Each structure stands twice: as C-alpha cells, then as structure tokens.
Image (cartoon, rainbow, N blue to C red; front, side):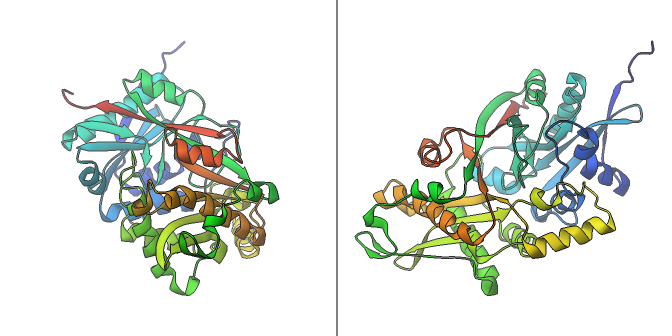
Length: 387
C-alpha cells in the first residue's frame, strides 16, 4: 500500500485559488449529516477582497491545504487594526477554518496561519473569526444536528479537539438559543407596570421599527448603540460605518420594519435589536451554486418572504443605563417587542446568538423561554512569542 500523500499548505494567490477557498466548506463537508451549504454568493460578499467590508480597514492571507490533488482544508490569517486598537494587544486572528477531521491537516493549517501572523508582528493568535469579531466566529462544538442559521458557522464534530491538539487553548465559549415565536414566548416576557409604552414612572418609553426611507440613519443609530453597549464585552470590536452600510445593503431586499426595534427613553436611543430572516429557509435546498431555475426560485421566495425562522444578530442596551433598574429591564422590553412584531411575520422560531457563556443576566432572560442552548461555539488562542 502506498503511503498517504503529504499535506501541502499554499497561500491563495490567484482568482482560481480564491474561488476554491470560497467554495471549500461545501466541497469538504458534502454529505456530512447536518451540513447545509451556504450560497457561494453570500460567502463571496464576506471573503472576497473586492467585496468584503473588512478589507476597507484590515488585511488577510488565505491558505489552502491539499493531499496530492485532493483539497483537505482551508484557513485565513488576518490583521484587524480596529480590534488591535480596541483591545490594546497585538492579537492576530485566524478564521475560515474548515478541514477534514485529520490532525495533520488541522495542525498544518494552523501553523501556516500562525507563521504569517508572527511575521506581521502579532503576539497572540485567536479565532476562528470569519473574518473579524463583527462576523462569524468560533468552532461549533455542539449543535451540528440543529437547524442551520444564517451567519452561524457549521463544523463537523471533533474539529475543536484537533485545534486543541495543535497547541491552542480554549479562550471563551459562546451559546445560541432557539426561541419559539408565539403567545407563550410573549407571556414569558411580560414587563412590570414601571416599563410600559408611553409615560410611566421611568420616563417616556417609545419603540419603533425600521424606517426604510431613512435606512442609512437607522443603520448609524444601530452602529453607535452597538459600539456603546458592547464596548467592554469580551471579544467585541467597534463596528465601522462601512461595515454597517455593507450589511444593510445586503439585507435590504429581505428587511421589513418589524426586523428592527429601537427603544427610546425621553427621545434618546436606549436599546435596540436587529433581526435577519434565515436565508437557509429559502436557499438550503438550492446548493451553494444554484442553477438559473434555482435563482428564479430564490428570487420568488424572497419576494414572498417565505421564511420560517430568523436570527437576532444585534441586540444591546446603552452603557449609560447599565447597572440601573431601567437597564436591567430593557433587554426584556426589546425581546418582547420582537415577539409582538413577529406576529406580522411568518416565523416560527428566532435564534439568539452569540451569547457569552458568562453573560448570566442575558442567559437567565432568554432561558425563561428557551431553557437550554441549542448550539455551542468555542474561541481558541495561542501565544506566538518564541515561534
């Protein structure tokens, strides 16, 4: 019997290799239980240097791994100046880690990413972030059989173990919860009389949805509130204006007023949430590269809003209200408003993720409706000094 071909890791340096890099997850995981291919178009908007919002302020190097002619994995290494400035540490990131369940492959990919980050002067490698902390991150540890959700990565069981075997240690775990939409969920978030709409003991409280005629204005309000709310949270980095503009431009065909909740106290923004329809509901059966007929089906489904689930991608409360009675109540108000507005939409389930495992106030609130997390993701890190 011939020995197995060695693992060769090469940097992505041309358009053909970049196309392979973008398509790699559906090529590597085809046929695995629980995996549903993302649209190549969606991944291109995220990862292609000419399209991805990250590349207006950051830089990255992609790598592919082969055994002979067979693709066996991919990884990215990236420098995000915004995160480095915010964290005050030379933290380089790896991401887009997808591979066969082979310790040699995973170790070779991580070595390539770490070598590149070391050459860029970084002290720590952390990830996976695809492609920075405002996008997808973490290795899926639990939940491979759960319903797929937009913007949430999928990895085969055991990939995290191979990352640890390559010398990385766990930094944080993050959770996702699936909340049913309906009267029971709404009743679980009934608020005290002190926080009703209109004039109350805690001031004038109002809420509104998305104003599509002033999308740029609402996007900027969301960005400022998000950066204020999560400035001190582990793993967060400030959203940049061009990132929010890019996000809203991509989501605009699917967004409705009910997808956005802005809570104002005495006319000032105080809490927010942004929900996005789950693209897998309408594209999961079309494959990563739909046929012309598949694109027609997708367009029709978007026009009809044929979604059955959605994901809360952004939610927060102004830092000014943190550790106050009002601040403690606002997340319940925001989630309650989402549930009420959901009556006008066809969703049966809304997923909330990512939630830091250590964020017990938010977990206790969510677990009133969804007692157990449905998915677990893990971020890893490794010191680069001395490599």
